[in-house]
Length: 381
Image 1 (cartoon, rainbow, N blue to C red):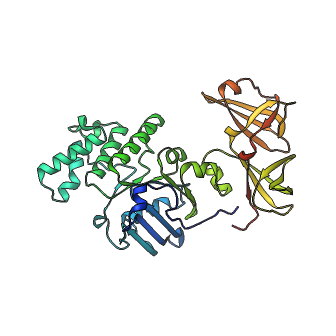
Image 2: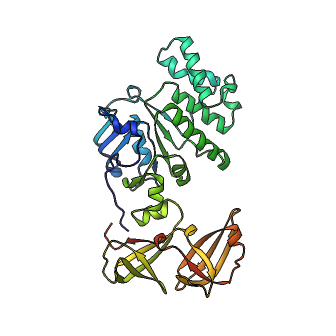
Image 3: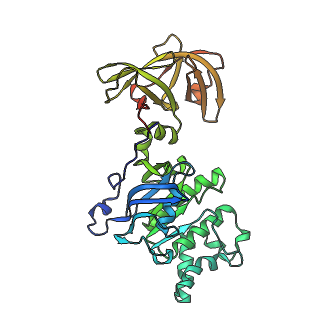
């Protein structure tokens, strides 16, 4: 399956302030950057521009190159080729301590023998800031992340969420122009992770610092980002605002990775105006498309589970089938429907609609015409 890989420039949602700046418009600008490990390409000719004060998430599966990009921006790795600019200045060969960036790591890396306040003061101490200024700025940073009341504790006495806030305060106390976040929420439980997503977005908006956030969690990227950079195999697959990537994926990979999707393999059997007729198993589906694909072309049809609805079998519908499973998920019910020839559709229903169906029920399946997306899977990768 082919995925579109494109160098990305700042063409999506960016603040009006960024658009008006004439000098050093981009906070970070990667130009044809490549990085390999022992001959294996981790980042492949990647170009990416990030505007000042953007909250950008690098999203993708493990090994796609997102953390490598973050480490090259931070100066912890050197690219094999290409150029890295921060606020218009070439930083490609500068060490980490000479770059206007700071990093929050997965492990937090707090000093166990220091108090919370001392941990946050430490970067200012290294920078030889006056003692009074160090203390004032550290307290300001702790207040920003809402943990000032624990300033005298040591890391061993903190919860995971509290330790994460301290690490964030320590990264912000130096007032970096760019903050790099390497999956900082991955060790937290689900409820705390969601709470910290809201907090991170608030802190970003208050500090007006550029945030570059690495994650493999699509929910985190959707919840917090101004823009998502979706990666696969060291390349950028698609970039844009969260709603655009979710509603208008440009490849089967993007559709499947960002949110749940029914991906039905099939082949084109004909065209009627702007609608392609696609046979998926024993079902023929009409899909709107601007691409004129020849009969027999292999394709995938993508339909989000929440766009599908179940109805009585004799009601107007796109397909019929048998319910093979019903899974209760709290506020929603997930049904699986066999529509023939092994083609299974996942259907996510609000609880008040989903509770009526049982395994073995014969049902109709329907969705809005715009909910079905067509991807050509016949091109060479």
